[in-house]
Length: 559
Image (cartoon, rainbow, N blue to C red):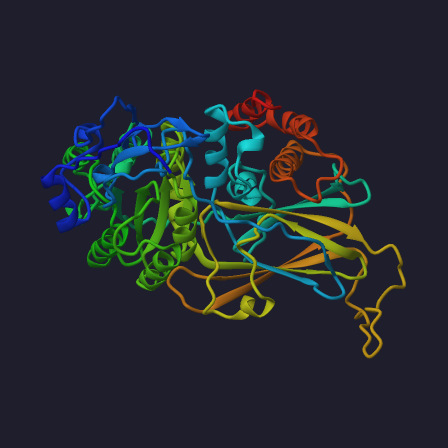
């Protein structure tokens, strides 16, 4: 095909050599990225963003568009330089964020599948990420369905705890009412709280693992991470130890197990951080766990805290490879907290996956207030682990429940036999932390229905199938220093509660919001309007976090 213009792309010799030798340029930061190595025979339009510098030139002939470009990737660690006709890199405004596909759970027949088994989860990254998207002006229709993890949206907020029972690690609070979006069913809400114990804080061994690659340049990325770590630093004492490991093209250890009360020294090290180069996350992870192991505090809180945008392009880069590495490292007894930052190239998929693999918690940090909430207000309680490998198994009573649908937790479900297998990982729970889970319930309307309808076998209910009991919640967990699990049971009754509490209304509103964003097949009569009504009923009497998120939903562009 005839070209009416010749596009000439000239790369400097030094840049080409750098690419061949290293695969990236760790000496060039985003602040210094240039597009001078590109020469065109006619003027080109230049785009500039935090991710790269682009020069594109084009014209149409017979309806075809020809593009020439120079993609300056030295600043974010990739080794592709040059240009070609007919291909253009993602330009500023193009979104390359990565999310795992989440398939919504459906209804299960109680006579066939009476057990609902899953790992306890207290992550909250989905809510703050969606909050960021809405704050940036995104409409609901533009939010990726994979970004919506209903259990994380619910668990971001605090709920009233149940009454603690003597000798039990957990308390359970139940609320049951007609399902707001399907009046034929009920909606069950269970809030499981790790009971506060007598303080046994010995000290924390924190390793700050900071992604300082070029993609972390910016006020919402490295700058925000540094501010958050400084807030945490100010709360540390001589009982604590701090290491600081950074990674870009390679890793660097700036602090190795110094006393937590050396605030000025830790702050100076944090102030020295700058973003440039590629992203070799696996190298940083290996070094961070080495520091954690060598400075291990027996009986203390030993934890690696990762701050990254999840975009990794050197060393181990696949999600499966990273999770395998983290699973190996968690056997050291070191826990993991994952903090996500940034937008545009953010890999929620990587951040969530490595947190799950490492007995960890996952948070997305979208502002200074959230950094303070996670690293100051929540960290001491959530990281003083009172139980690890926590698993829940609900056995529904077929005399009462015909079908049930678990809402959320799609990537936390486990096989029923894994519940009693101590080799299978569960979640991690800190003192005072909560796990809230909801189920949509369809009742057994035929009181004599005790069979499965099969030709060759028959299921008969045991005498224990008391019609006052809806289910039994079994919780299996390990003490922090043990590898043998303990079992704890809680019976949940089938009676509806008298009045809808603000907690219940709020959780139901969050569920309706998530179903509408995802286009759930179980959406029923719900809409953004009814979700907002429920959220409003649950917001005013609780805390500012609820009210501010409710207002954000109300002001969404396509509401």
